[in-house]
Picture 1 (cartoon, one colour):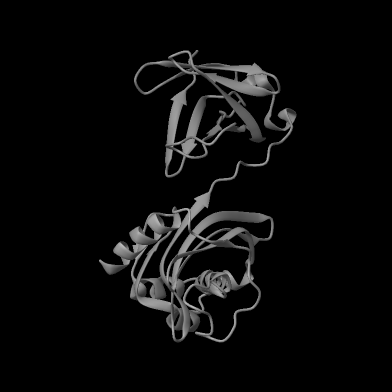
Picture 2 (picture 1 turned 90 degrees about the vertical axis):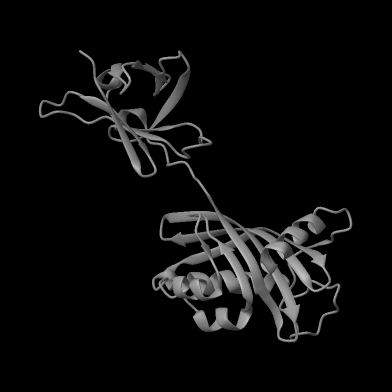
Amino acid sequence: MRTSSLLASVLVCASCAGATQQPAPGAAGPPGASAPGDTAGALAAQRGWWRAFVVADTAYLRARTSPELSLTLSGGRTYDRPAMLVQAATHTRGAGLEIGWAEESVRLAAPGVALVTSRGTEADGPRVAAYRYLTVLRRDGAGWRVTAAQSTRELAPTPRVPAAAAGPPADFAGAYRTPRGGVLRVVARDSALVLVEPSGQEVRMEPIGPGLFELDYVTMGSGIVRFAFPRDAGGRVTALVRLVTGMATTFPRMP
């Protein structure tokens, strides 16, 4: 595919010592006014394209997207130009989001081809999602058009709460049976809980709500991992439930 070859060559060129990096430019000049070695307007075009995608501005996307577009979103799905337009049209609630930009970089990867990397945030009231963007743009007589793009979601830890808000530590301490017959132990330590795995490895769980805890780091394979402690009618904790994206694993409490 031509777009895949272009993206590969862009990434190779961008890593060369001769690649130029520029600060964020101001307003873009007239379409096609820049010299072949200039990136003026590329950053503004990248911002405009991603915003149009978020707010369902399909008219803008049609005008500023190359026919050979290849788009990969943080969920893992890939889209060509027609599929991207269909997906963008579903973002009917995007207009209410506040979009911010940071850590922006523009590099000339080849004559008339710019590579833009940036960090973006989408805020809906108190809820904020952060992304990393990689965007390849090609300039023609009508200006910059996006030809390849990718977003990567940045996982953010849940705000912590005081240990007392989670519940008495003694309620959670104890032993829990794994599906394979192993034993997990939960002990209270330093205003948090420590989960001791069957291997003896220890991981720290910090309080995020009543009966809810979260690992103090983002895992490589599962991302953010949370734990819930359900109770019976008498208020006794009956299990430890591990929560990862799309999966809940229950570890019954041992007598």
